[in-house]
Image (cartoon, each protein chain N blue to C red):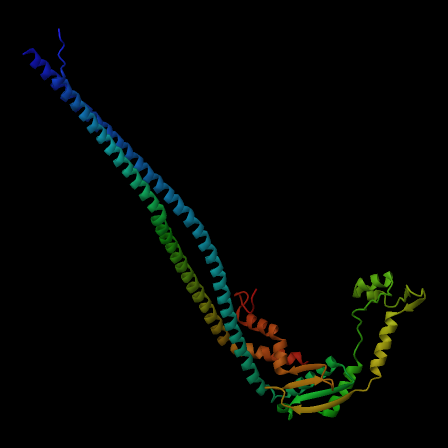
Length: 115
Length: 290
C-alpha cells in the first residue's frame, strides 16, 4: 500500500494560493503606499494652506480694512472741511454785513481806553 | 476517473481560494484608501479651521491697530482743521484791525483825538512813574493840538497824585509768626490792621520794634509828592497810525501806548466786540484752541 504522493495535483494548487497571497500582499502594500501618499499630500496641502493661502488671505483682508479706513478718513476730512468752510463763509458774511458797526464799536472802545 | 474528479475539485477550490484572497485583499486595500481619504479630509478640514482661526486672530489684531491709527488721524485732522479755522479767524480779525487803523486816520482829524493822545501820554507817564521821563510822540501826531507846557504840569500832578497801595510785604527771615499770619491773611486783614502797630521781635537780638502800615504808606506818599518830574518830548516815527511811547531815559522801563500796542493789548476785548455783534444766538467764535 504505497501511498502515492499527490504532488502532481497539490503543488500547483498551493502555488496558486501562494501566488494569490503574494498578489493580495502587493495589493495591500500598494493600497498602503497610496494611502500614505494621500495623507502626505493632504499634509502638504494643509501646510501650504497655512503658509501661503493664510498669509495671502490675511494680507487681502488687512488691505481691505486699510482701504475702508482711508475712505472713512477722507470722507470725515472732507465733511469737516466743508462744515468749517461753510462756518467761516457764514462768519465772514456776518462780519461783512456788520462791518461798520464792528469798526465803530472798536474805535469807541479804543478811544474809551484813553479816557 | 475518480482521480480526475479530485484533481478538478482541488484545482477548482484553489482558484476560488485565490480569488477570495485577492478579493479580500482588494477590499482591505479599498478600506485602507478610504480611511486615508477620510484622514486626509480631516487634515484639510482641520487646516481650514486653523487657517480661519489664524486669519480671524490676525485680522482682529490688525483691525484694532487700524482703528487706533484712525483715531489718531482723526485727532490730527481735527487739529489741522482747527488750525485752519484759527488762521482764517485771525485773518478776519487782522482785516478788521487794518480797517480800524485806516479809519483812525479819520478819527485823528476830530477834536476827540487830541484829548485821547493826551490821555495816552498821561497813562504812560503814570505807568512808568519815574522822575525823568522820555515821551516819544509819533511824527504823524505832530500837528495834534496839545499844549506841551500844560501837559507837563498834568504829568507832574498825575504822578504826585498817585496813591500808594501796599499789595504785599516781603517777609524776611526775621519776621515773627504774628506778622507772617497778618500779611498772609490778605489785603482785607491788612486794611483792618493798618492803624494797629505791629510788634516785631528780632529772633537774633531779641530787641522789639513797632511797625505801623498806615504811617508807612503816608511816608511813601509824602516822598512821592516831593518829587520833581523831568519830561522830554520827542517826535519820532514810532507807529503806523499814531500814539506814544513813554520810557525812562535809560530805556529800562518802556510803556508802549501806540495804537498798534493798544489794539494788541485789547485783542480779547475786540474779539468780544466782534463776537457780540455777529454771534447773537450763535454761541462762541473759535478765536483760540480750547
